[in-house]
Length: 377
Image (cartoon, rainbow, N blue to C red; front, side):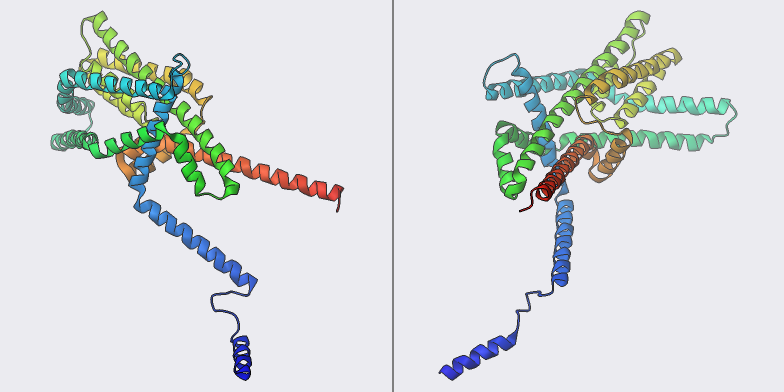
């Protein structure tokens, strides 16, 4: 028996290390790198696969930040519990949407139905003017271009209708956003629990900074939307009061201008094109006036409203914002286009906070090294 045990011990000593153990440090490091990159690629593939769901969650975060910002603003004048302030904000938003739906149903829908005919009429005028200037334009080609333009607007209308008709996505964003705004600390602690203990303090600081930036960004966006919508409506209405020839679709143009102000760069171009198109349908003088109104709105918003907001929020380069909008618009459609700017702002805040934390770690390590040199053990 003893001989057998000795024999077994000798055999086990000759077997060597397990094949799952990498004894060479260089190979172990390379294996760890390969595992890390494989995990990163797997997470990227998973993120792409569930990207639509992640975008809905981010939309809920944006909605929650807007409600939270409104509740904080009410807290300056109403000294009531936070739950009551959140309820007041949600009730006010619901009342506004109900009024807007009623107003749109009674007036705007009729004006919107006339839009394709205005597009076709204005396009025919442009082609006729070009022919008068000596440009050789085939009338059939022109008609095809007009029909394509009208069908294009119809496609956009159907796309917007499909977006508005996607009640499931909208309801999910609202429900998730309400849950988040009611108990934000609960979900922050849940995410922090999954992180290493050494990174939790940094996560809480970054999350707080992101929330602050998001609230300011959305507050500024809402201020810009209200300003552009109200200013456009007053300016277009004033033309009709002075000349006696009201600009058609003034209310529709004002609402579209205000809604499109949520999307920087692209929204301004679209609203300006629509306003000018409708303006020239009433004559050259009316068209020139709509151009003046458009530039007045954009200049006041660009030189006064946006700079005041940008000083208190994250400052984003216009070219970077436009590139992000194009990418998100291609990948996720209208919803991605609307959320591109907030997402870019959050990415920038996260990178800035990570760089700040890394600089602090490097400074601490350098200070510790200096102390060891001065006071060796």
